[in-house]
Image: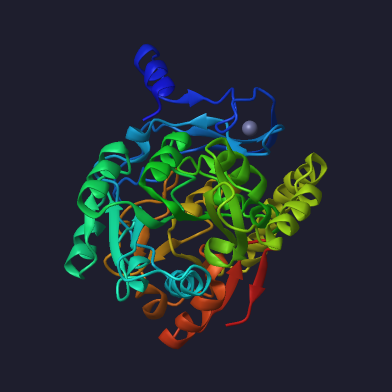
Length: 423
Ligand SMILES: [Zn+2]
């Protein structure tokens, strides 16, 4: 992907790349923010019963670029390790995500009326959920490398099965023409060479086209102590300041920005070629807040709060385990692996982690531990006193569901302030 990366990878013995320059602006002035330990790859989940063997772990140090303000990981792990062919596909389409995409469809219709002939392209379109909100009135096209593309095609969302690269862009243009709207939700953080992505977007975008991107919002991460979203698939953590810096490097202007609730706090950004559309006032308001909220002093405070939160969760669980109570974890998203490994939870503290039936993680161990992942039905059949919500950012959606399913115990919410909530 990244030419520089390929070179280093080919020559070196190590397949990971130490980040000594900013991933956006190439500055060498990178300041450490927080270190959440050496983490095993999220997909390193051996089957239950296998004896533990040697296993790699990668440092998860977060750095701040003093020039463009990008917050980023200090190590780029070889994508071949993070995304092996067996990488389990999980759609992760929560209610909050579906509602967000429906709302995006309505917002675009209100702001930038499109004609029936206009094309909307979604990068990393998954099962076509986002595009389904545009398909009734416009031409749509998804670009998606995983098996989810088949699902989209079956439900009538035409999807090119490919990674997002120049070949994919040229194929879409040849078949459908250029796009009036290009969307990319939560792909900006994962792809190694972000400049190549923006270059591809520019090529795909019609002259007056709008590029819409949604990214996990780093001020939300800082304010609500979401250290658990730090793992090696997430190479970059964006503010509007750093996103704007990136887009401007390619001649794109941010014309609108808004905070949205997905993934525990995200930002939706509209951009277009410079000078074509008026810039909404909300953009400067968000940038001003970031100048106050993302200072190095505030980031040092974040580090302190993360450490205190970790110890607080330990103290809370110690109190529970002292009484001999059982604790099951609920949900094994990638963020659960960071939380469990950073806090140091093991199978003596968490009896198991439960996933919904059909999950490919069932009958495996949580990475770096001997905590088994089992089917969710165990929560109701073999009730523990406590359920630790590892997808705590959607606690409001989860708790009523688990109670309705018959769970009678109490909930432990690990972040930002570790606490028990009565069931
Ligand atoms: Zn930078």
